[in-house]
Amino acid sequence: MHKRVVFQHRVLPYALVAPQLLVTFVFFIWPAAQALLQSVLLEDAFGLSTRFVWFENFERLFADPTYLNASRVTGVFAVATATLAMSLGLLLAAMADRVLKGATGYRTLLICPYAVAPAVAGVLWLFMFSPVVGIVAYMLRGLGYSWNHQLNGGQALLLVVIAAAWKQISYNFLFFLAGLQAIPRSVVEAAAVDGAGPVTRFWRIVFPLLSPTTFFLVVVNIVYAFIDTFGIIHAVTSGGPAKATETLVYKVFNDGFIGLDLGGSAAQSVVLMAIVIGLTVAQFRYLERRVQY
Image (cartoon, rainbow, N blue to C red):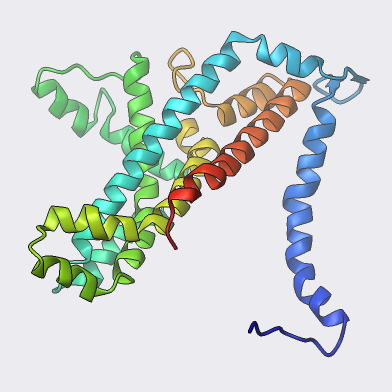
């Protein structure tokens, strides 16, 4: 038997959801509609002339080799960032779950990076990997490895992956730690009594029970890597060198605000929105089948 909430006044439910609906309309529906409209228009930089061009912006977009390069960079960047951030978040959560003394301080320190703004996080790693004054670059030179992300595209992509993953580790840590603490200790102890070692207990019992948390974080981390890493890339590499770190979201900014191609930038934002929605739907369609709630 399901309990159902009954409101005495018909207006009250609509009044309760009205603020959220207003926020959704102002910050999502209206900007998305504007992007859809501008994606089929050709406008000059000053907005003095506008011409309806149907799908010409999209045709030029998919014929542009720089856009295809940005799509490839975004795919590599998103997979690497999500994998690194989730792996380290799970590792730190498993370690924090075993800490008895000073657990509160340990967990607080691990949560701190999440409070750092993306641009600030990028600048922190930029200074550490600076080929001139960076401590990490200095240590790498001492080991015989020359580091200069300003000239090497692979090193630049690695740097933004590290910075973006470091920013997201705290978020993953919080959810993994909550998931670990929700697992009944009796299940793990029963496996230990049966002779299962720590590694076997983790992969055969603990990790499968974390599948709902892992699925949720996969979705969140992919969306984060596609959209919320603009500040890090802008602060660290500005899409360079030679567009080696230019992701789709940064290309939208670069073409729209720097190149003043308003129609092309709007078309890119529509495609990016479609890609993120498609990936999210695909994850719910296929990955959720393996999740046991």
